[in-house]
Image (cartoon, rainbow, N blue to C red; front, top):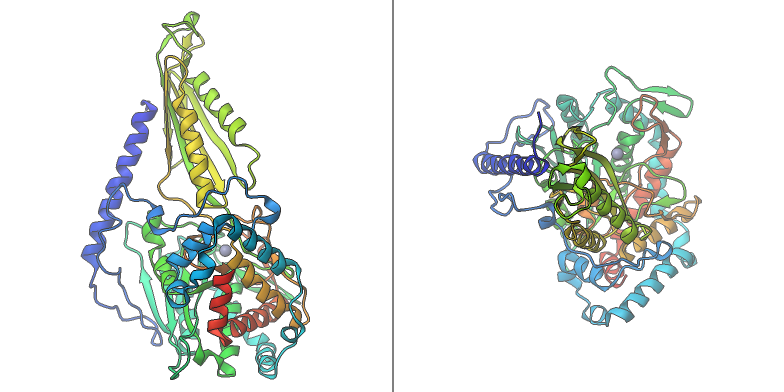
Length: 560
Ligand SMILES: [Zn+2]
């Protein structure tokens, strides 16, 4: 089949629009669905799709509607990427629950330039300076938390084994839900209320586990910090029939490190906090998604519950694979674009002359070359035209990313189509790059016409904000207090998008708190079991110190 690329693209947009409309009406129809009795006696399973909403029913709506806008950071140097500017902070404050409780007008009334330098200096201080000595030793309560973690290492491994033995590739919906039920039981035993949020059929994914534990009310005490803990139940490798195998300190099996091991860290840390009564003073929301490795479409719906949870939280901790000495403060976002070029078809002997023009392929080449000369080399910005087709008759499928082209050597070709990605570290950088790309596209060569379309759904960036660096500073202090390695923030260019990217524009966060492993996304996936108690102790003490004085933590995250 052949068709004009622009017509194809418009058809793709229309099909997406009708899908969104279908989703919207399904949501409304499904609202108020009765809770479904669970197969598990211990688990309350609720089928619900949230209240009716009108704000994401239009095909013109985008993921962007869910996210705060971050500033233009075209000149963000990689080495001080943490020096996020005024508007990042304002946005975080404006969209975070932090702001309406402890709004610090003084901090945010500084001029941009001053604020920028202050933020940079704070970042540098956080990353490089050692924290005062008192925090680098563990208190008696913290010692008990650590002892609980270490005494329960074998039960943690047993829980990991049970979860790994339930295969849960993303499209194995029964398996994903069964893993959700397993962890729901663990969380219920700690006093969490749990819900299984099923996805409507159009999304074609299992759903998510959402759990929440309210704090004990205490008169005269500030409201406890609300911590969102996130992970995912699915694995990228299906692991059909694969079982957990333990050999000395190594465990193998699908999901051992990515990231059932991380969920076990989360759950065991909560148990250790409960053992000293500390969980009673914490407000914790857990969201375990069922489709992190292959997110359902439309993403507006597939990530709706996660984003709603973030809007009710003060900070997020994510348990993707970790390491001894780094934690994740930043991840680049990822967005697609499609360039569709049409041109006059003509005899090739007329090429470059007034009647014939330049043809679609020269025009596509011009656009790509100008993209490169205008944008290549910007810190943490990358873009790649992954697929190109051009000629007389061209077809391209943006979903399958496959196409065909045919033509003749003696013509000026009328069609070209390019499909590429764009990776960025802030929304501002994305906006800026898109603006430049649109300007380039608009300068079409004679006899040609180009149009560029940017995907509506995309993975937003987790920008390296000062608040995220503040969290890693606390994590570093905890690590050293436990006798482990110092911890610094990751290189923002090194990690791809993950679920935390969807909530990072809303609240400060830290990722990479899970276990150490290897062979992720392959049949050789393995976990270093010695990292289980270590990461659990570090996570438990991090949560303990962040919530012990909620107001102080709020102020630190605001000031930073
Ligand atoms: Zn993962």
